[in-house]
View (cartoon, rainbow, N blue to C red):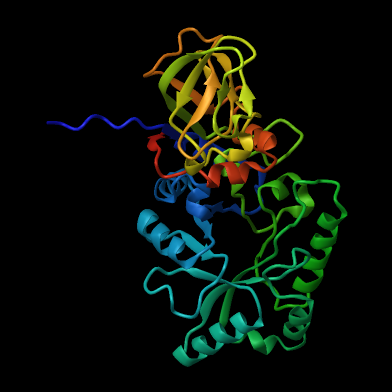
Length: 364
């Protein structure tokens, strides 16, 4: 006897939109290359599909966070494009993948330089200079040590000097200009001619002073607004539709969900939908979000649970089992919109998307 078709939510990922976003950002940065940051499985959207789409659009530089992400991306996009690993890795750990380590401290510099000298050939790498984030990157003391003794870099083929902006999404924040000045000052004391990389997604909108030889957008490629408080210049890349499992009538005073946090103020039609916090629909959205059915807003009621959420479908009479409610999409349902309701950022909405969705990719 055949098994029934599973009831599952559908996550639609628009590869054409992601490619268009990269082209928009490329045109915004005409004096330097524009990379594609596809860490965290392309912000939850699937690097194995997003990577090739960006490659086909013309992207030749990629960044990931972890070594394993880089190895998998190399398999997906093939030889040729540069793949850099932001968290770095020990010498030769990338096997034959040809990955570029980002060196984040003097121990990284010393290890890769020593391995290169032992092999008798220069080791390609990116040197990360911390100018205000205070996470990874050579700190001021380490920068001074390298500037005072550039021979520490012997054996390295430095492809870029990079820094990472801490407050680029706040254009008026004084740290932006301070970081740009610090980066320029230390670069001037290092061996000349090494290309520089400065701007992330939001940094690309700070103006010419933040342009460089290589920009590194990530969130903007995937539809997140790089200019908070202003209209989003990039296209949305995701839509999430979840199936209605059941619709029931409840009386005034009846409650819905764990903790009985919501009570009906009128006779109500409750639509129960197959999605929850295990799928990345955050529990913090409880009582704060809505879905859309046939162009009509339906309020989320009760708490978000692991596998199920409920909506007030009283004013959406056509909603029935077998139908679907849009949870992420246009009309106030973008990842940034949901993030604002949940008290977080659009990055978390995307990277929390679970693996139980049926994923559909839309190509150009």
